[in-house]
Image 1 (cartoon, rainbow, N blue to C red):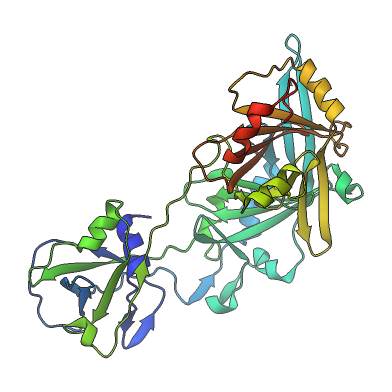
Image 2: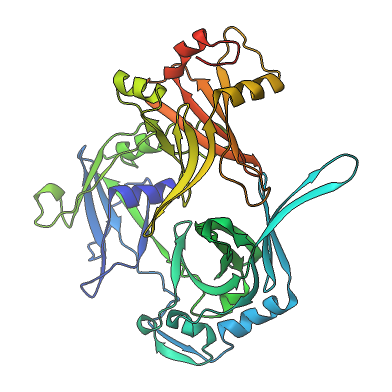
Length: 452
């Protein structure tokens, strides 16, 4: 979001009135032309005073026309008829990620797969289907997908929506079931809900793929096919420009705003009223803004997760004894790590908690893995890896899951901060990163197997 838009959103909200009625569906953008002029008296003039007594007169514009009217009169093809040719020709859309790749052949299947080279030119394929074939939802809330004559007010035309990238989208749903059986749900076939949204200029790109619940998935496809339908066309709110001119020797732009744009964040207050001085008016509106600085994520290649915190030395000792477990992750699956006990994924829903054991601690198995990997302890090392084995059986490989826990000495950070991240470089083989300054003293006492 442009800084001026941030400024007007965070610092000052100006309800604009037309015929004495507040219009909440209008956005404004402040501009600072810089020249000091005295505007003629008008109902469209608003005077502002900052906390530093900088004074401005702002000219409110006439509203930009909004192409979205309160009523819809549509007699064209239904949304289903618009989308049907795409489903019939089975065109495919790909999404490539670090390890897994995703393929949606519209109306045919959704596939998750990974290809790797073995000896020579032979390729090893790992895959499972998240859904096959397709059907349309029967829920009444999707009834307008089939409508060919639409004459009603928008308030009565309810189409399912969701928010993505700070925008609200109406979506068309296609259900693809009969996927690869899920071992976590008693061999229930996997299922994917494909949500098609209007995005001008898009060519059926897969912009989101996620596991919405255990072995049920959601895929979002951006397409321009639906953009001719009024119920699926993305609403664009017009932005109206407010020009604010300094008066009485004020700078061309408020000093607080300059500090905010230059990274010198501090609290800012602006009062708005109809006449000077604003703080004496009968009706004023106030807002404050404060910038919070984010911390650097633990790695560049892994999305940052919420850090766990060890709040005192006693809790730290409980962690090292495996009595205090660390949790992290976001989305449907989260993960839990209990030092020298286990690492697992889990999620909570109305039916309770579902756990997937990634690996459990066994000192002999760790030593065997350490020796086979030809790892050696080096004085001054900052990272150690411990091996947790014999997790739950993986439905794709038929073997137990396992996880390498990378313990990293993170100097110059508070002892109370512990960062976690989890990646799956190969099928059902995981890497769990644990980074903290708390670990640094322990590395001096590690033995030849990397154990403290």
